[in-house]
Structures are given as C-alpha cells and as structure tokens.
Length: 246
Length: 313
Ligand SMILES: Cc1cc2nc3c(=O)[nH]c(=O)nc-3n(C[C@H](O)[C@H](O)[C@H](O)COP(=O)(O)OP(=O)(O)OC[C@H]3O[C@@H](n4cnc5c(N)ncnc54)[C@H](O)[C@@H]3O)c2cc1C
Ligand SMILES: Nc1ncnc2c1ncn2[C@@H]1O[C@H](COP(=O)(O)O)[C@@H](O)[C@H]1O
Image 1 (cartoon, each protein chain N blue to C red):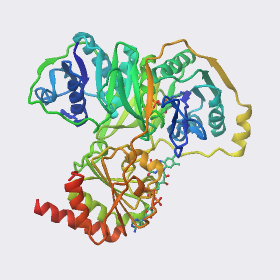
Image 2 (image 1 turned 90 degrees about the vertical axis):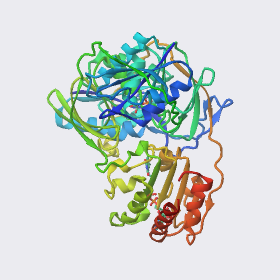
Image 3 (image 1 turned 180 degrees about the horizontal axis):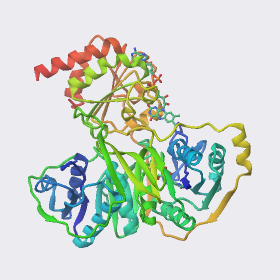
Image 4 (image 1 turned 60 degrees about the vertical axis):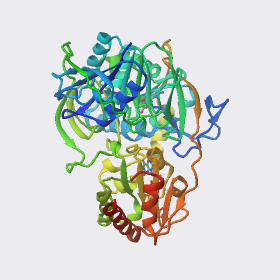
C-alpha cells in the first residue's frame, strides 16, 4: 500500500501568541515549532503501523519553506521512508490542498492521511479539499482504521456519536485521537533520518482564495472572583444573577 | 442573490448548530434557502429561523461527503447562490471544504461573527487569538462556529421543494452508528452546560459526585486528557487542544490544573468556574469564578446548593 501523510508545522502548544507589523503577521520570535500533533501522533504513526502489517511505503508531504525541514526530519526519524516538500509559503487552505492534490495525483497513492486539524489555523479543511480535488471518498476524524485488501473499515466521529464505515481505496482520511499511540523517535531513527531522501518540489502556480487581513488578541480577562468553600450558595447566586448562565 | 445554507439532521431532526447557521445566513440580509437530506418533517423548523425555502434530497440517507457535496453544489447553481453557509461542526467540516474545492471558492472555516464589510472574524491558535479574513473569490463558503452566533426565531415557515438531481453513489458505506450517549445527554460540542473533572479526582471510583452535579444541572460531563488516557473516563469526554473543543455557557472545572493545552479547548466558554485545592493552579487565571477547596467537600455542597436554588425558582 502506497501511503501519503500530510505533515504541517505548528507552533509548540505552549507558545506565547503575539503579532507584529500592526497585527498583520504572527510573531515567530522565540516560538518553537513542532510537527502538528494530529499529523505526527495519529496520522503518521497509523500509516507506519499499516505499512508494517500490509507492506508498502510511507511518504510525507509538506507545503512550506526551508523552515519546515526540521519537522520533516523528525517525521523521517519516527519512520517515514521518504519526504517531499513543496517549496512555497502555505498561503491558505485551498492553496495548500491544490499543491498536495497535484502531487498525489501524479504519484498515485492508495491512501492520503492527514491530521484532524492544524492547531494554529484550526481549519480542519485541507483533507476534504484534497479529497474533492482527487474526486475520492473522504473519511473525516477517523479514530480507528483497519485495512482488508482493497477496503478500509474505519470508525469516525460524527455529530452525536461514532460511525463505523467502509470505503474502498483510493481514499483520503483525517486522523483524530485514538488512531494510534505517539511514537518517540529512537537514536537509530534519528541517524537514519539524516540520509533518507527529502525531495524538494516546485509549487503549482495557483491563486490564493482567502487572505488574513489582521489578527487580534482577545481582551484581557478580569480577575477571578473567589467564593468561600463554606458558602457555595453565593456561587449559585452569582451564576444566576450576575453571570446569568443558570 | 439568495444565500444557501446546508442543514444537517440526525434521524430527521435538524441539528441546533445547523439552525444557528440558518440564523447567521438570515442576519446577512439576503433571502435564505436551506438544503438538507433524509426524512424531514415539513420544513424541519428551518423556516422559523429564517429560511424561505427548504430543498430536501429525501433519497440520501448516509452522510457521505461526496454525495452531499454534489447536492450542495447543484442546489447552489439552481438557486443562483454565491454564498454558501455551513455549521463548523463535524458534518460541516467534512462537506464545506469539498464544496469550496469544487467551486474554487474561498472558505472561512469557523466564523465567529457576521461579515463586516469584506472581513470575516474567526478564531485562530486554538482560541488564543482572532483573525479577520477576506475572501478573494466571488463565490464564498462560510462555516459558522457552533455556539458563537445564537439562534433567532422569526416565527416564519418555509416552502418545501424536493430535490431530484443525480448525486451518484455514496463512496462511504455506513455499517453502524453508535451514539455517544445512549441516555440522551447532549453531545459535548452542543452542550450549554459542562461539568468537567481531572486528575484531582484521584480515581474513577470518585466520579459519582461529578455526575451528581452534572445531573442536577442537566449538564454534559467532560474530562482532562490524562484522565481519558489512563482510562478513568471514555475518550469522547476529553476536551482540549487534542480533544473536543467546546463553547458552553458554563464550564465547571473540578481538580483540573488548567494547562494551556486544556484551556485551548475550553477558552471559548462564556463563564468558567474552577474548583481546585491549589490557589496557584493556573486555571484560576482563566476563570470567572473560583473556589479554593477540596472537591470531595465542595462538589457535594454545590450540588445541594443548585438543588435548593432549583426548588426556589
Ligand atoms: C501537545 C499536547 C497536547 C495536550 N492536549 C491536551 C488536551 O487536549 N486536553 C488536556 O486536558 N490536556 C492536554 N494535554 C496535557 C496537559 O498539558 C496537562 O498535562 C493536563 O491537562 C493535566 O490534566 P489535569 O489538570 O487533570 O491533571 P494535573 O495537572 O495533575 O492537575 C490536577 C489538579 O487537581 C488539583 N487537585 C488535586 N486534588 C484535588 C482535590 N481534592 N480537590 C480539588 N482539586 C484537586 C491539583 O491542585 C491540580 O491542579 C496536552 C499536552 C501536550 C503536550
Ligand atoms: N502546509 C501543509 N503541508 C502539509 N500538510 C498540511 C499543511 N497544512 C495542513 N496540512 C494537513 O491538513 C490537515 C488539516 O489542516 P487544516 O485544514 O489547516 O486544519 C493537517 O493536520 C495536515 O495533515
């Protein structure tokens, strides 16, 4: 089975979020970048497990600049066979999806695995777009995936519950928590990653359908109102009269 | 030019987040046409939130993103809509991106406010910041973050039209549906009241007091990630950056430290109450109200206080 895993770069989950240039750009100063957790923990690791049982290969693809190379090396250290970086600024979701779809089309993958969402722009949209551009089924938010010949059986999170579904390859799947357990790269993996192929591909010339005009930080939160543990009825009053939530 | 809204339903009942999407579209000012699928009774209540017409594809019974994308795209052509609105819930997230790709339209995923001029506001960095997004294409797809714009009943009703186009086959075959809560509790993403607990509860055997509090309030229960990871609570209760993101009116956090990854999934809550023995717990900085105290004493007392309040009101 030929698997493509989409890997994106994301600010570490504890990063301080700040903006520069009058609120028009994310301030990367002092920010540590990691592999987007859903891509690494769930999509990539499940892809490796499927390869281990089904045979085949796992390639990662990243739309981004040279600043993405460290996270791509991390994915290689965890176990992907090779990596592709489509060399352009990931301007918006549809732009990214078109780049990934063009590469996937040329290279005939059975399965394209993505993370549920990126933790910076929280779109949860690239997977669906790639599926439509490839005109194949899309299983979003999969928490389990088993493969039997040309059919996959998955569990996916839907409104109000979990659905067990079946679909045939080629297929696009986005991975949520439950798909796999995080793997920590070992020394051998890290050494091997240095010599694994990282191919740089030129980007498609496509237009950008959305633009972020500016960012804003939420207003500072007022200090917490503390209520004594001996007078919890006061909290109930406050929730009713002041906060008006009950 | 009318605005088209995709409305989802579970077993024929239009979801609350879809009604919010209809309200959102109606507030934009143009005529609203809704499109849905399956077995809908009358206009499904969509008219009451501002839809003038509801298009129903009754032949479609599975939630397959390929078929539903064709449905929305064909409906948008037939009514001549340039703007298509979804809810940014699990269903919307699987269809809106496909529709945007098919129409080559800009997509704003998770809008939290109505368009102002040509800018639409959305959350980024897991709610730690907001962005204003401009769509550069004539056709626009907007998905609305659940629980962020509210419902507006109009008292109206909608004309119902059945859809007759060709939607092809479903690429995904549904074998089974397992509802998250068999007992009819409101699913976390739609819940307005949430009671959540963390490692401070010491063990799964102590969750009785958390459930009692939730039952009295009619709230849905949630938990921190380590609690789900060690198997004290089911995975679907895990909220935070890597779990479910919620936006209830009231979030009560018991024995949860308030790590940044936890906050990322709950900071959209309107009011946060924190109960923790440690006055230095970071969660107090994100809270509106707090009690410094032992959950095993405070929570049963709070349950009694809510009961007394309900008896008096
Ligand atoms: C990439 C990444 C993603 C993550 N995603 C998530 C996520 O989505 N969701 C999430 O929750 N976490 C997430 N985490 C983990 C997160 O960093 C914290 O470790 C976790 O939230 C802590 O859970 P907790 O508050 O239950 O436990 P603890 O941090 O152990 O806190 C327990 C709290 O209980 C209090 N306490 C103890 N006894 C009592 C008592 N008797 N009464 C009242 N209070 C008491 C303590 O003072 C303490 O504040 C993530 C971490 C990483 C690195
Ligand atoms: N720049 C990118 N390069 C490669 N994959 C990406 C990129 N951006 C997003 N993805 C993939 O798409 C998924 C969903 O992203 P998003 O729609 O931005 O939330 C992520 O979890 C990744 O798997």
